[in-house]
Length: 456
Image 1 (spheres, one colour):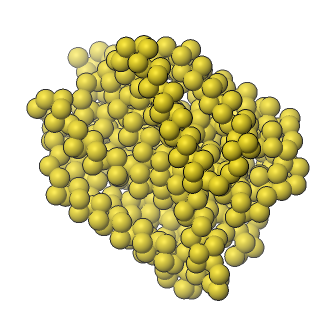
Image 2 (tube, rainbow, N blue to C red):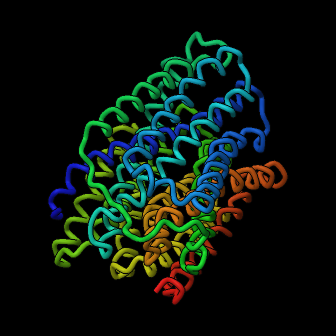
């Protein structure tokens, strides 16, 4: 099969990445909404993320146990079937939002989010490595950055469209938690449709000719083991910041904006990941330097234009964000198209922005936090591809371990919630800052690949 035959499968998978990005970011809308409906404390509201991302951990543990006892499940059922199973479970999770709202039960909502998270677990385990192996290993990071860019397109649109549906369109006249009933039924239908599309599209089959091993061989690779911690800290930091952003913007010392307005700035946080991932896909490609930089600038401005068009934020208010975009471009150049080096440099910027924001007030503090999304952009795809590099027959098992580490999205926001309740929301951003310090280490040192002689 030639390289050009991979175009249709890659286009098909982008719809999948878009959908789970959209639904993941909807949690940032649910947190302030359910906090108001059920009159929750910060740490209680963060149980939304705990239930959702906790499902990633439990689902991945189950997958890992199966891979040890019976051999890697993906090697048996195939990537395509794995993705379809994940979509069906995800659709069920969305359907469960209806009875959760009907009974006005926070526990029921958390259960629905847990089921949705289980579905996304299977999607992550199957889809990420599939995109990575859908071509040359040297361009795996570029390819995964591109797919993740469409994931970020979903997270960019979700705060605007999802926030409008929940806080405005279905909110008027709604009782209890009824405003989420119809939106999540629509999402369920969309998952079913995407599953049907994938079932009908012919996807290349990748089979491992090595004997299926019934052991935890993936753990013999240091770049994977340290990568698991890096995924934990990255997802934890990114999700914690997104989870607190609406409440942070609403502080009188920051911007004092209502939730219905603050959600528009959330689009710039998640949209920054889209900008960075499109640029990352080009930066890590084999294009000639001049064309590469022109393409990056063009994609960044086009992506910014999309965010501006859907956000409703006045153009003059976004000038600080444009400055952060320029800094993002400089950081890409400094990364020299090397995944580990770029990861380390972006971590340094994230740490600097967090420190500056905790020492600032007003819109300056707000934009410094929002701008972190630009530098979160390449972290997932770069960490993922660096971690599974050289795993061979243990690639899917390693993928399940990396997805297990998404547990960071369950625990870190809750930890930040406790800090926010005790010391205030602004100082609580020290929690994600610690996460980026570890990613800095992984980018420059921990990601170095070591070949294990036991598999030669």
